[in-house]
Amino acid sequence: MATPDDDQPPLSPPIPKYFQEPEMTQECRDLISTLPTQRGWIHETIHQYQGFWLETWIMQGVVAFQKHFQAHDTDILLATNPKAGTTWLKALSFGLLNRVRYPDIQQHPLLTINPHVLVTILEHLYNKKEVPDLTSFTSPRLFSTHLPYSLLPISAKNSTCKIVCLCRNPKDTFVSRWHFFNRLRPMSTGALSLEDAFDMFCRGSSGFGPYWDHVLGYWKESIEKPEKVLFLKYEEMKEQPIANLRRLADFLGCPFSPEEEAKGVVNDISRLCSFDNLSKLEVNKNEKSFGVENKVFFRRGEVGDWMKYLTAEMIKKLDRITEEKFHGTGLRF
Image 1 (tube, helix red, strand yellow):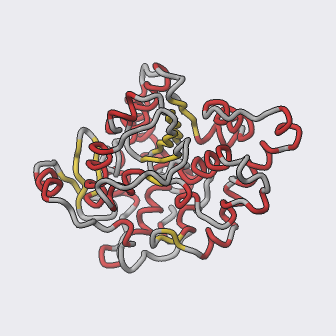
Image 2 (spheres, one colour; image 1 turned 45 degrees about the vertical axis):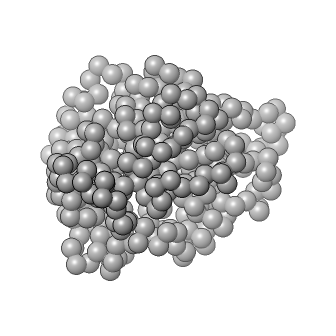
């Protein structure tokens, strides 16, 4: 059975500043004091807020985001469960929306800037400042979030802004998350064991979880409002990247023209944003963003990586939970 050290460096000495708790308002501290708590994956505690578990460090950002964000009808919001293909979706969406602005692939910003810098996570932005200045974002504004649909600001739900949700099967999501968060845990606390992490994931006690509730929220909205919410599956994106890239472009209102198709623009963007290409770039191998090594966002990107880590008992349990949670919804992996 594999361990966290099989394919990644040791734990980082301190928690990156990006994931440290900000100076909270008294209002946020008072709120946190009333919430149920459990053991966290990075920090000592996570808090149950409106049905989902959130790390202490992001609580203020979530509350401020809900309270102050005013969506524009032209906004595009990328929604993912952590470690479900967030980096890939950001790269693809940025590439699609800016292909006229950056026609030369050899000079594209994605070659020198990490996707997480190019596409802001809103709850992180609001974590830095309760009311950030968004005037520098040009239309259509492209943002991302890890929040479940039910926790999104009212303006995001009531406006005609478009939401793209990318989900990944729970086994690979869990394994990728376990690796990623062990990279962020300080040495003083040691690694989170696979068994402990698995138990927490199955109970729903993980950041922005329960996983199944998070996924189902967007799935149901995509069925009821297909013009507003596009639901994509990581596995299908890997199997048919070109077809799903066209689907994403159509949904975002920037379909490929016959001329672009003839010039191979679709294939160019797909290759530019591929895991193989992005993971080999200097910026993503040896540089940092927000105090975090960019290479931690590019571990393997494989479908079925869970088979190297989960025991037969774990697989059976996770399959049973998934079947129970998704029963009757039409959602399958």
